[in-house]
Image 1 (cartoon, one colour):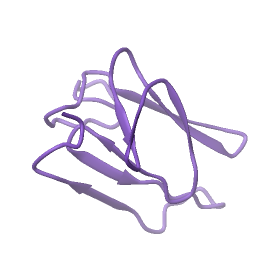
Image 2: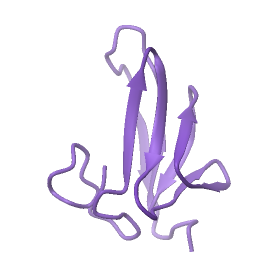
Image 3: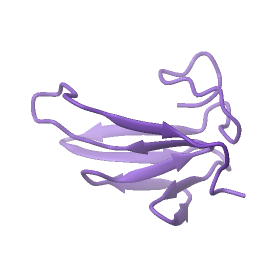
Length: 90
């Protein structure tokens, strides 16, 4: 995900890098990896590198916030996301 058009998830927002992060799911375990020098806020902690994602994990990338949900049938039955005017990453 990032602000560049060739990402699977395009976030044209302040504080989001061209190729900001990568979400991976392997054998039922999910993680998000900050690419290059980009930052991800998990709960209230600034993170670098790869971060495991648990059910309900709340993350911020730039001014976008996400709550991750996992479903056994692979279909998202609900989702939650939001955008704030300011970022916690200053």
